[in-house]
Image 1: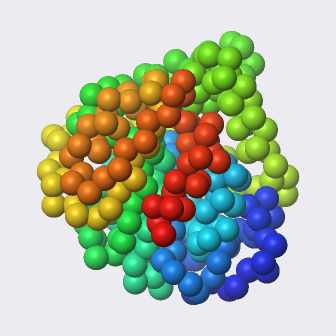
Image 2: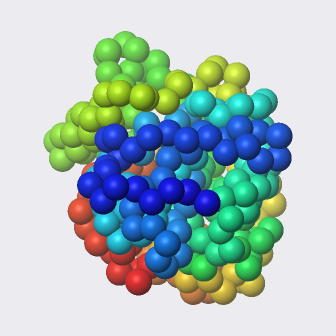
Length: 284
């Protein structure tokens, strides 16, 4: 599945395609090295559509791998009714991956996407080779149920200061964090044509409900997950408190942990050059 891209295609101009599976027309983009190695599936964060991925991270992975990103059911340009549990999102992701014709994939999940990745590896361990999870934590993790409150608070802060809420949600309020946030938000605008549809209020509310449920869930035994996992975050994550990331790494028997200094939820975007380098080495 998937046509070979011309070699110089980048995240800025890669076309958006659709694939129908499980009654959903999934909007997706793919780029990078075709037909060699294990494809990397990107799993998206709260309130995000395809255009929320950092071009430096996507293009960085695509330099060595086939990268596929998609919109969840009922999000962005994907059809269907948005789902309100992480488990349902994982089942949809498995449906999409199998419909793409992939027998095995690597997963890169950021924030909510990291939670979806955990569910995928528990539901279909044979489908996953390696995982990278960032800005995330385990089910029932401390403070995860409060993501909705933090999100709404920072949406208000953004409105009052005429700034994108991600400046507060993803980055620290130190000079380095503020500068990194501004640079990240500029990179998200590099794609000017054929942009994705914005997330709807209904879809956002469904995702926030899913996060509350995930936060209230009993901790899951991850000791049987033998897959290699790269776990990363900043040292000052407000959305998913950083202690969750350390806890997740301890629960996964074959994990590597990276904590970036003076950074928050979006640490892997703030330190994108270092992160991409580590991720490529890990996947290799």
